[in-house]
View 1 (tube, rainbow, N blue to C red):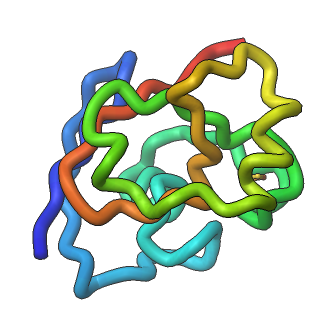
View 2: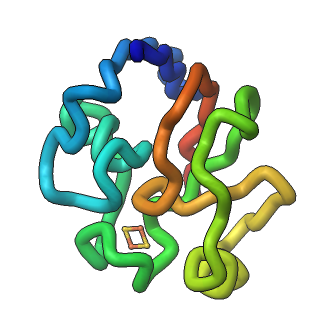
Amino acid sequence: MRHKITFLPMNIVVEVDDDAYPYGDHGKPGSLLDIALENGITLEHNCGGNCACTTCHVIIRQGEENLSEMEEDEEDKLDQAPGLTPYSRLGCQCVVRGDVTVEIPEF
Ligand code: FES
C-alpha cells in the first residue's frame, strides 16, 4: 500500500510503498527515519536508529494512528528528548502504515 508523508517545516511530501520497506538500514524498516534518509531529508540519528539516543525526535502533527504503537524502550528513551510533547515519537522506531504529517523540531 502507498502512504504519503509530509515533513515539516520544509513541507516536503514523499510517497512510499510499504512493500518496498526497508529502504536502508537505519531504524526499523519503514520507520520515519528509514523513509527520511531514503528521500534525502535530514533527520539526525546519532545512535544509528537503535533507540539509544533522542536525536531522531519528531512531532506527529497528523495521522498518529497510522504509526506503529510505541513500545516500552521508545517510551523510556523519549522521556529524555528535549522539547518533549504528547505527540513526540522517535523517528527510528515508528513505522509508517498510513498517511502522516510530522515535524522535525529544531533544538
Ligand atoms: S536514531 Fe537514536 S533513537 Fe532514533
